[in-house]
Image (cartoon, rainbow, N blue to C red; front, side):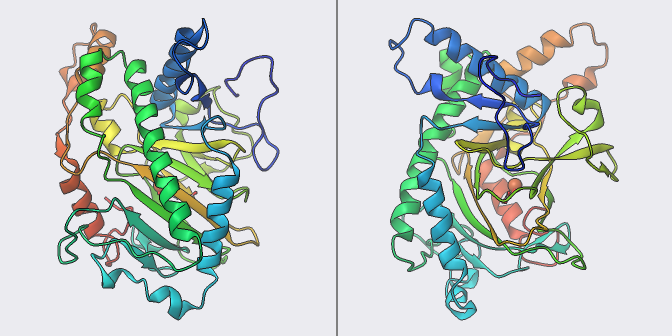
Length: 372
Ligand SMILES: O=C(O)CCC(=O)C(=O)O
Ligand SMILES: [Fe+2]
């Protein structure tokens, strides 16, 4: 079921199905505060929809059609495709080992998730640092392809996505009931975001491949804004049975055989929207109220799929700890509870330290890029 204004037909994804995840428009936060009489109500509606979606799914579509011209990410996908279609030795010139083992190109199946090779290739860029030093983890320089226009267009996108990150964070702060002072403190943890941008290329997944196009994982950080080309049936989001309820169209989807019973729902692209999900830092800030959700990619179509996730992350040195606003909600909902465990505080982390530990596993035989 789609939470939309009743006047418009429900948006459809690339397979023509009505989308299963909520669709939330960020437009009210882009308009000038004095532009309309109902701006406060519209902003409040966006914020409460974000709050609901982060509690129920940890995933939603963010309608950014008033913020970015869809031709812009289309162009990025084209440039990404041009890079991936270069001869292997050209791409290998941007290999991770040239730099800090985080910034650069990764060959097909170089990434591992949960011990299995991912059937994709990719190139990662991080926030540029002052005084790069490639002998320090994450402190090297980005390696830009020489495909004409690539760097300029992608740098413009990183600027835009950082702005979007701050706007969505403010809307979420309001959804959590934060005071102005509380929002100010939180914004100081993300205003120098140590962002990551990936460009990923997915050839079709062979039937006999022991692994996925991208194995099941949670994102590390704060907010992911995913643009993907129109390929249907690739990205899947895990919804535990208990939460799937009546909120999603689950017909015909396979049951997941895991510890937690649930289903994988397909999150096909919707024009004008990015798929947005929250990472593990939001789980700590919200003390578990918001869910960072497992997702994976299974691309069995015939085409070469390109996706471009932008990870809006906290500042490198931000200390992430449960937010008083989230604790207020948890306490007010649990005031009848006698079980103090339900109020157990999440351990704080320094984002940069947490990230280093994650990236350290990426390309070894350990847990891999998205492992724990
Ligand atoms: O390609 C996709 O659709 C998702 C990629 C993803 O989840 C990631 O890179 O973290
Ligand atoms: Fe992800």
